[in-house]
Length: 328
Image (cartoon, rainbow, N blue to C red; front, side, top):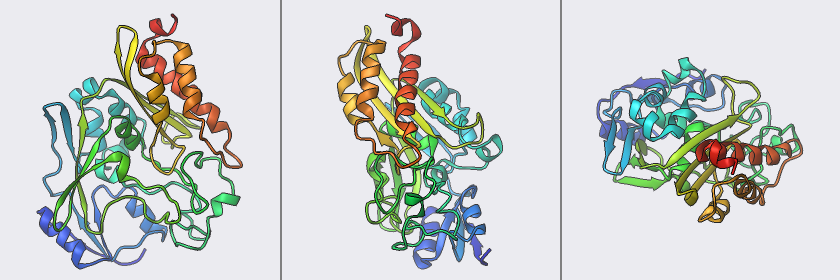
């Protein structure tokens, strides 16, 4: 591993200034992803700025929303009684992430910023435009079973790995940041960038800009379903987060996000629009599932994900809509 210096400031201003003064520096909290990337030679940093002492650990229930500090541990958020009661999709997504040991170390902000789990990105032997722009994407012609069916480009077909980000996308979350000059509130839909011709640019964050909190509006009935090769400590082949507002067996509004299928959490906008005013039954949900994969463009080895997305979505709907309603 390349040598680096380490500092642990006690204020956001000092932490942000540390990054601004040294463009090779980076923030570290849990370090569960960053340190692995550094050990593998995929990412380098001459200075690590530890933000664990900053006052960013609170979970606050405010009027019509919840505010989660960026340095909150995943396990603390997952087991918070009010989050389990009011935002089950968040708790479910976190409890299906990583392992208990990692959830005890990893933070909310770090989870949202974790890098892709593409094997070609994480092995410097292979060409990767995300790691070194302009040298090509080995995954396009390689083994791409785990890769994208939505939103990819010729430059990159990797998928975003965060379970939490998928749940937050279905809940229309807002990411709060602090830079050297100003604060920002960024919709999660805008926060993540599609690869296009610049796959090395993954988010709207500017150099030195720090995620401080996540704000989530009040949720309706919600659920997170993750399909993977093994039952624990595995990334998603496909995941689904749904939130439904149901009144008298009629869907007033729906929010759907997919994981494991795109370079960012993928929102099924057209399927959501279709569901408005529709009855809660299997025919409705099957039609919505079909609409949700209309634009899918599978790679050589992952066409199976199209059917998997449809079945996972119907299954998630059956949980949120209630089994008794699905039988009607």
